[in-house]
Length: 50
Image (cartoon, rainbow, N blue to C red; front, side, top):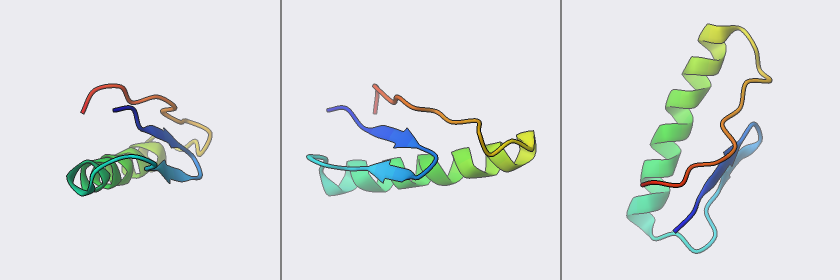
């Protein structure tokens, strides 16, 4: 399974519920990291391993 995270949110097509929740948790961590970096343009585009 492959999930994609970008600045706009999480794309969870075809993911099971536990994976969705894991992606959402990871996205929240990323958001905090983005704020720490002071740049809203810092994005993680590809997540291959969950």
